[in-house]
Length: 394
Image (cartoon, rainbow, N blue to C red; front, side, top):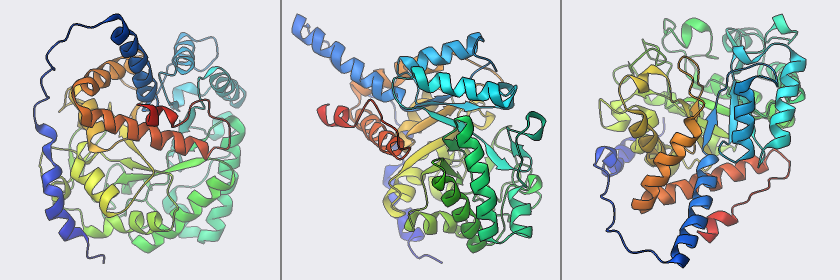
């Protein structure tokens, strides 16, 4: 068992100032024509960086649908970093391929085209549209060795890449410590209750996807396996049920370089956040002090869907966006599922731009997130029209 967690908790306390009031606007100054032009240029760069932090869902399953046209326009304008597919977007494999080809063709920069294709109960592409499904993670671990699982997952990744997907929001590395867990254990989404077994199968999953040019995201940090409730439907508090061993798969996979992204969970874990009210996804002690500073993760942190009820029932839209970025998320997901809002990218840009102008710390967070995302996209092996020079120029 690693010995760093307790010292970390004491050191991280000072970083919890997420609930502090926003800073006041600076005193206005009379602008000159030159400063107006400079401000316009700087605002353009800032919005370009913020766009790389927003990943959205959309309505539609064909290139003629208004929802699809809207998201293509947002990609073309650099207002989004990518899209996430739900079942509603999948009419046929050929239609999906056309949608993805169009998105990449018109996008200002390489898009992340994401899907939840874990296997078992959680897979958007199904046999009904001719996609070869894979077993749940629980069944894979029960019936296959890690090497055999790697072959299954390599076929999965090849099929995803063939349709134009480059990000699979998986594997789940939550430990199956509560088999009655309504969103993990009951759905067969966990490989095992054993951290070493979870690590072995997760590594096979990640490496198989990398072999086919598909990125992955470990989820749900810092652990959703012990919960008794579903964070899609409201607060899920794991403070009393969570244990340090739930961090072990992350620790070992980060140390071996087998992590592209880590997804932040909307669970309450007061042991790490020092608050009974702040979800892990909005907790700076959890995502920055623990995941970044102590566990040394240098890649992209991506939030779970920011429109899940664990967030929307308890935090305003504006506050959740600000808090999520300040906590350490590089990409925010808005799946636009129950209450779709095609204007999400513009709203997020307005919130973060305003805050960045008056809060230098927010500006630095945006710059760092932009850099992290662009470095990740370079792993996809295709030209990216923007680069991190924007970060250095600011």
